[in-house]
Amino acid sequence: MTKEDEIKNEVVSAVEAGDIEQPVEAAAIENAVPQEKVRQERKGGKDRRGGGRQGRRGSFERAKPEFDQKIIDIRRVTRVVAGGRRFSFSVAIVIGDRKGAVGVGTGKASDTSLAIEKAYRDARKNLIRLSLTKGMSIPHEVSAKSASGEIKLMPNKEKGLVVGSSARIVLDLAGVRDTTAKVLSGSKNKLNIARATLKALGRLLPPRVKAEMAEKSEEVSSK
Image 1 (tube, helix red, strand yellow):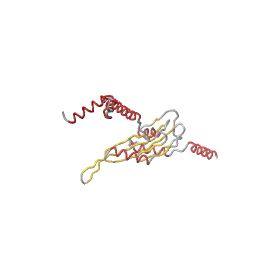
Image 2: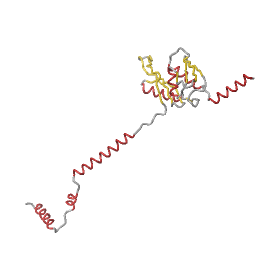
Image 3: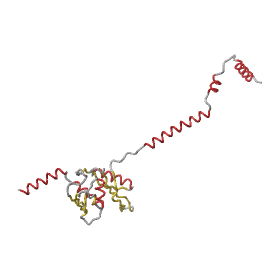
Image 4: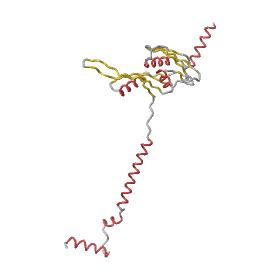
């Protein structure tokens, strides 16, 4: 038996006899929580933390965009250069908040997503605010022409939106109701028709101004 073993035996016998107090380390080990319980608590803590994260993910909601958008035309454009051909995409888009604001824009880029982003920014630059009635209809008849596209807008009562081609998309995103539109040109170019529709909507007068102009015209005709 070595000298260290003799010292350990003397200490153990002294503790059993009560001559000296139990070492702090031994007492801490006896009073410690079992390792399995510690592991379960730790596991439960991770689950609770994980559940909190999952709850945060579940409650997360994406913010709605300010304007609704719809692509009316997308084309692949080819440009011939000295080294060969270069391809890009041209996009025409309509945006609106369905509350009287609408815009039409175009964008061109080598990637479709970039072209759409450019068209969206261009549409925001061309955004107009419409003068509509309380029922979200146009106050009077109006027509306009843009390039080869020509259109005529007419109000109707409780007949809904009777429109075709890209003009329907423009009026729908603008929130216009109870309106009839007729494409007067033979062109089927969606971009020109959309621009003609936007131009016609920009010529709308507020209902009060239109009523005042009608009264003045009646007075002049009566004289």
